[in-house]
Image 1: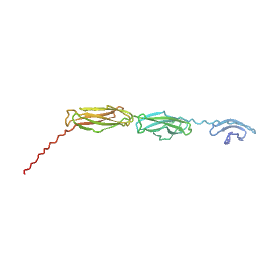
Image 2: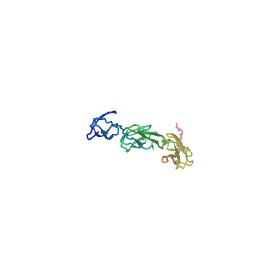
Image 3: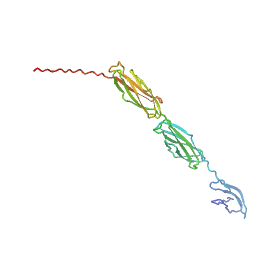
Image 4: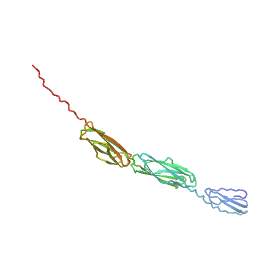
Length: 293
């Protein structure tokens, strides 16, 4: 309160308070923590008469707080692959704020390197979330994680985004033959047994092809459909030509190819030979021995 000379008083609560000043014309200023300041000009104070002034403070409105995360995202990855999401975050409030970051809902290994981020008013930032696709995931398996940012100033202020990861199809197979070389007599059939296992993470069909042979050769199956991890055996039969003689041979190339990914292919060569004929041993003749007396 001033009339050429400043006069101050301090209070700690609502109520009626008095200040004694000489008669005169005054300007009154009042402040209170958390409230808007008040100034009243030209207050006349008369000698020996009380002057009453009502002060009604208005609360200073709290700053606007806000946070917005980027949109929901989805990615794919192969088993054992680590997928990285870069999530954007914007402080839409009027003051600098720190936001706590948490993850929820995931069953796959999911990591959030940062647990909090501080942004100025209107500032945009980002943080990474990593998701590891399980080694044993089948094609089409998926996992979703919800990431939430919450204001440390007011935990009612938050936003969330969902990140969905799906396992990609992986194609592959292993196979082996019980033997890659056989022999027999002309006209006989030599049979090879091949075992094939689907090592991919999705059901696949494998095409079996024979090439390069001259003798009659057949495979019991030209198509094999196998679930992940499933195995099947198929025989390859070679009929040795009736006019073949030792040491004639014939080779067939057996090729298996994935229908899901035709770059997944492998071949094995099976060689069949005419066996060496067995030559009878020369006969042994035993003669009696006669001794003269």
